[in-house]
Length: 375
Image (tube, rainbow, N blue to C red; front, side, top):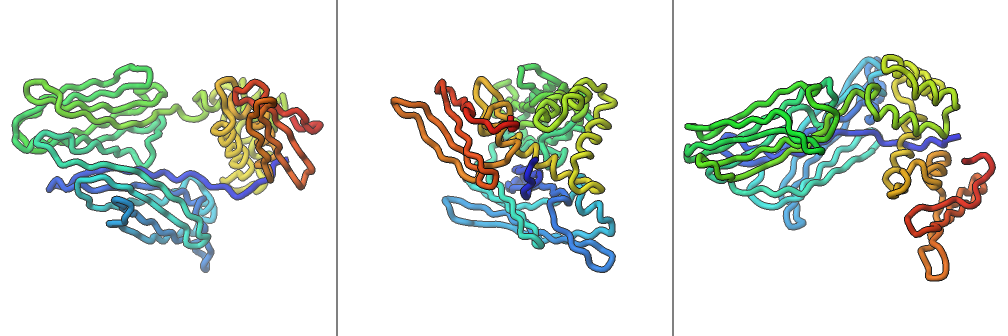
């Protein structure tokens, strides 16, 4: 049985540098918060929530600027208040000058006082006479999109001396394949705006870079800038679905595993919803706490217990962590000349004292005393 703790969800945040009509740079933070992450309270027949967000600018460890806002949300539909598919979308801007900065973005729910924080180091240089001023992502706060979405970008080029230039841009996948290469002559203006709009289904599922190269009128490269993003197939048509199903082996029956793995694409969502619906401790809403906790644990093991030989969720420590959750205490014994590194995990309420030994010095820990029926 899984013990369900409090779980944070996903908030999309995107940091971008842009310039105004006077070429003054500013930072833009776009963010999207699911309603399910915010605490609503009922007032008469309306559900209300409030949250605040703040942008903090630091230079040389000193705060030199910032902006903050407070937002109120209202709905008369309770199901929206717990939905991960309803969002509050907003942005914050702060004018800057040339230099190196640390940008901090905080947001917090005023009802529950839950807080989230992100940081980015950025560097802004003086605008050159021929310059790629900015590459702006316009497809929302998330840089991960599906093949059903539209890729929207804007490139700003500055040619303050009107000398003319060539702009070459293309999309490159992680395996080196180039898509939609474009080479354009820019001539006679101080500012050029190139709008790109492409249907994402034209890109196979992969990670990509938009690569922009700026050349002078003689063809000499002056500057280059890149922007990263990822295109994914919709979940039920993708390999991610198969991976997620395989990770269910600790709680699914052999029959359920077979049905989920072998299902036709058009049947996968129905079987998936049925599987998790049977395990939803609060059926009737859009949030399945059991599923959220399960995959939070799986993802933790992938990040902390994976080695070159074994994925984290398949390791002995991963199996225990997924089934039992975080141990109450870990006793660590690093490698010694005459022995092997080992760890002891304690689960006090269950009376478990689990010993993991690293037999071959490869980061792979083996559970030597598994309780009956645990693994």
